[in-house]
Length: 79
Image (cartoon, rainbow, N blue to C red; front, side):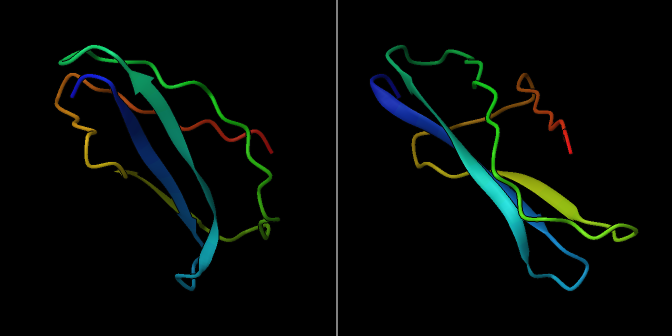
């Protein structure tokens, strides 16, 4: 939708299914039907435990945000 906020949510959970961090990325768009680049976000991450596997997921978090097969997402962890 034109003149609206676009947003996605990064969620990280620990092996027990408990919240281990995350953040939201938000971008304002004036144009309709355009692919946008979200800015990189650095977050103050909770400490992780060595040797454990954490799961992360990206999800649309705004009612005006639409993704399709032409959208690509990546997460880089600097720890």
